[in-house]
Image 1 (cartoon, protein in one colour):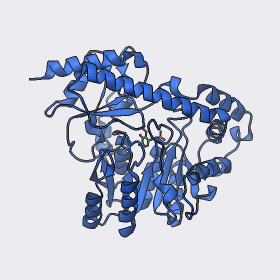
Image 2 (tube, rainbow, N blue to C red; image 1 turned 180 degrees about the vertical axis):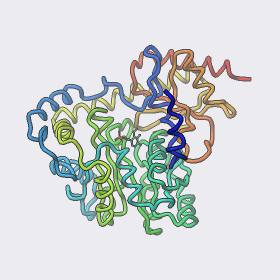
Image 3 (cartoon, rainbow, N blue to C red; image 1 turned 90 degrees about the vertical axis):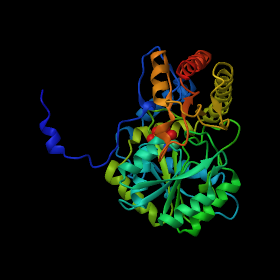
Length: 396
Ligand SMILES: Cc1ncc(COP(=O)(O)O)c(C=O)c1O
């Protein structure tokens, strides 16, 4: 078939969304998969999910259109989770502050669209989640990078960026960031809230890894915020099941109405069946036990991967041990052609994700993101050996 006529009809792309990055690829079935961002099914609360779906199928939720804002019990659960870490003196959120969305990816697009005018500036930690960079493009906003390290964003650079650009929003992941695993220290978190307040701006807090603490617990900044300054996203996609694509946006004040309108125009509502299943899972007593066991299993996997790298790929530098999350963010010797290395690793049976996709602007070094929550941790030793050998083969 000749579809060439479409080129003329479509014209230039409206935004340069590019193609999905390496993390979303399905490689050869026998390849060792360290590239993916999703946990292995063995790390999910399988029994809870299956019985939740069976129960949800028998509820009215399976047949009715839910309210556009979400099931009120699920909204109340999201609010209570945040309220649990709110200090005295800060009014905790209620279910009215919560909007259920079909995954936080669509939530990010709706939030960015609501906070930043088309062509306006959104400040973003860099490196940061590639999907947030994509969401910014999708929303037609200009992402401006703010550097960050193991303690969180560089607060002086953030203040300068606000002053220079006049931005009104900053996107960050205070808890076990994807890709670095960094957790903002309480001091940096407070300083970011202060800078954001000084510039009359919003903080978009993406709490994607709330359920993946290893050495530390999540400390959502939204629970410190009584002024409606933090727009908070929390996803259950990775911790409950990739098939329970349910997340929440928690926002207070007029911004909530904006986000609701934009998300509603995109999605109308989220499947009641999925919401009922999600609520069932997270309100079972087994959920707490599952999370406790998960912490230990993630710790074992993380430590095994890092030990394997130290043994078989000593040129790989682990700048900081992730305190939570699903990945290690590792640095390769300067000058490494990361894309070529990733291709060579794949040819030898190992899938890795080149770090360039996580940078808002130019990469500041040669990085890989290696997932420790994917299939078969028993293959981590072999994976590290392949990586070490391919790096040695590529060295001048
Ligand atoms: C930081 C971050 N935010 C948001 C998402 C998207 O999550 P969801 O599956 O809820 O769309 C991801 C998924 O990898 C992520 O890593």
